[in-house]
Image (cartoon, rainbow, N blue to C red; front, side, top):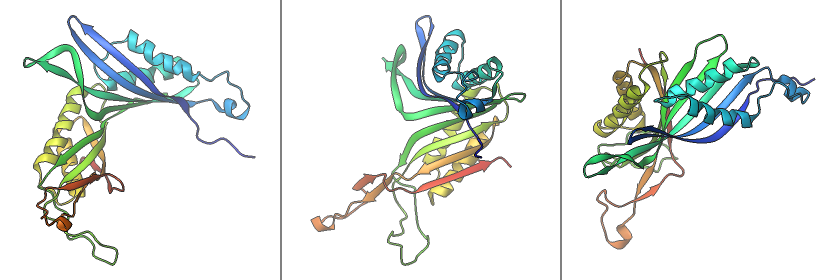
Length: 281
């Protein structure tokens, strides 16, 4: 007879906007939440017995209620609050994983000063927080960034790679390098200054990308990971996913023109995909 193996359920794409009104100065959180629960829910699968199942609509409502009832200053804090709530409230839940993605807003500058309550989206990048709590254990917290687009117009090479019958790409000592950084890191303990850690890691990543001469995405990944670990002692490892956002030189010869590292076709399909995890020694 077939048996039920791993199973979990929850609610995804819960869209929350929270405004924190500190007098005239407002703080803004725009969050996309996903919650997954594991526990004693086998009867719902094997017998259609839903008596221990917390409705996914109730899970959704919990996000808004806890956002109203509790103050938090980071998505990591809110993710921990939610994971703790589900494990403590429902004895049939053995573990809860909460993943929050926060849109990146910046204050609009008016006459050289940040506006109190007007914002603009800083880009497609999202800040990530993932909290997992297992009953009887301690919470683990992961932070990260997704879809941070970076590009530099020089100081990037790609050469001396394998030559065989399939190779058509030429060596280059000067190219545009562009990628969409997704990075996740593990916090060593809970309760650290998550905002300060995230800011320091972000700065280390983009500064290293900008200032380090690249011999390839793999080398740049390693350099960014080293810099991130040096920037914050609150993390023990960092993992990257880096797709190439290619800029292909346009063939100007049919028009009697010379390519001077200036005219390109932007394309992201198909693209190279480089991943790696850097761990503190």
